[in-house]
Length: 274
Image (cartoon, rainbow, N blue to C red; front, side):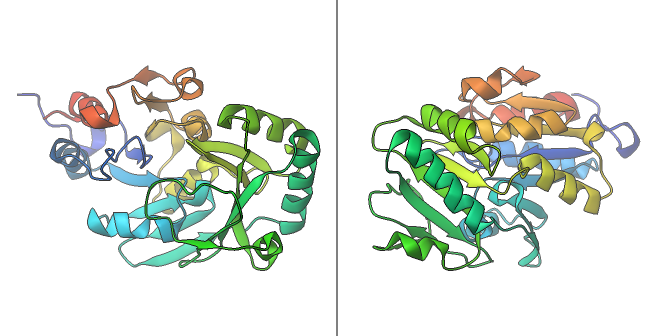
């Protein structure tokens, strides 16, 4: 049996995990092996922070089901949420005038877009415009018929889809023509997002880590999509899942097994013993 690590010689003091495609399996559960590996690491003194593109409204039921009580970075870094206290600690909103200008610039380049918008706050619904295809999952979606409704209340992000362009192509165009106005990221299939400029999972994770007195140098991060690239750049060590997007695999320090095959557990067991 491998010797257990102690607090003063932890390989990493902070474990940051994405949710979809990383910590969660396709049925939105966490395997017993991965739960045990995280428990091993936290018992040794490491902290675990969930870092997800999902907003709090689309995340908290999952965290409750996992009995997760720590800090969670949601909304691509725009929200820091205390799961144990069910309290939103910080929230960054998207400048709606800049977002509307960004959409106009993108549409001038590629034609009409399908749009959805995530309302700010703990209970923020996602307003879904005509044509936008809602992804599988418990998205708190509210269909609208008038796109002007998207701009009526504070937002934390805007979702884009195109009738013909794939996600990578749409994200590339959006960065090229509107990257000086807003942040652009791709968080999953059919999920290209406009964010406040400069916002990323890295900014949210750094804020949450600071609250815990932890630093990038002691952080290991796990992810699967391009929106995890900034988090890998911030952390000391980035681990891509076997199912990860090529853009993330290209910047990862290592690649583990898939989210279906206990990829996180394999790494944590190696580092913290089992």
